[in-house]
Length: 397
Image (cartoon, rainbow, N blue to C red; front, side):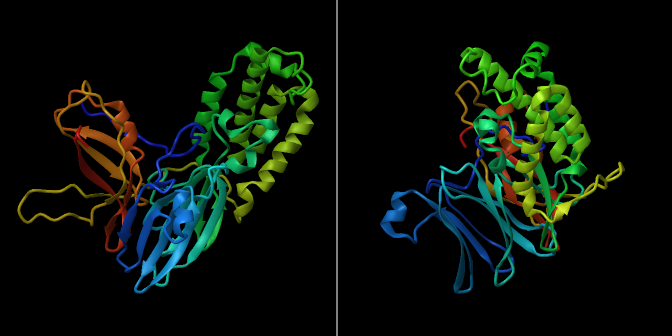
């Protein structure tokens, strides 16, 4: 029984979800070399002596010939998000995300060319997590993230209380970062609908009868009542954010007027605009207009499945694993080796996972894990392409 699962990575990801990274607190290692002769190394920080090793930190560097370029050191988390993909500058890049300290909420994203000598092409700061991905498999890679740093502490709400921080979709081209979130409004609409479905009329009425800031009632309201009001406030904010960050200000303010305490609308509207203005969008050159609805092209999917026939050749240089993690399995869940067919986009992200062969049952947690796997993408004529890859999964792995 083969099941197909499609992935919309990162968009509106729960803040409570823990993402997998290559190196965390000095644990984890990865090395690879690109066809240009530039190598990447991610691992424990070693250039700071015993003191650095004692902090269990991570570092990354690019190496070529007898030279090296330090990307980061002393980081609590460090990840290679993409390797070899062209994000829009016409050159293959290595994209790193770096969490400098566990005390800081968010990541920095650094994009380096893989030509000799490698150089920094661009950087983004303040996202909770980043993922370069061909979102709609149209042959163009976007950078998905959120405005986590800007909204952390907004209205005295922590990131841990939010279901998601405002989602942002960037495109990097010609050395410039562009906000293209408005091109993906249908994905924001899914989150709006999901959030609205969790709203109870009585809770919304109670919140609309409050002062909005929830300051005046703290001394008189019960802990349970205050918690319900805070949760309703979060839902309203998340709906407004989804409209606001997807380029629909009129819908954002209409929803705010419908669901927020009337006397507090002007204050919260000004606060929302101020927060957005100083957030991650301030790093972009501008925002794209909403594109007219049209049928998008689909990138060609090349075959990277190994063939046993004598003399047969693959269409592409197949993907190579960067980070594959699977959930632990119990003895009851143990089964014979199975095969998964993966669609890996040109940024190396898994877009779909399908079990093949005579499979009675597929562990849904395994499929969920497969959708988070990262690869160096397939290449055809030196260009990263979308590919179909078959991978064997053993219960002993």
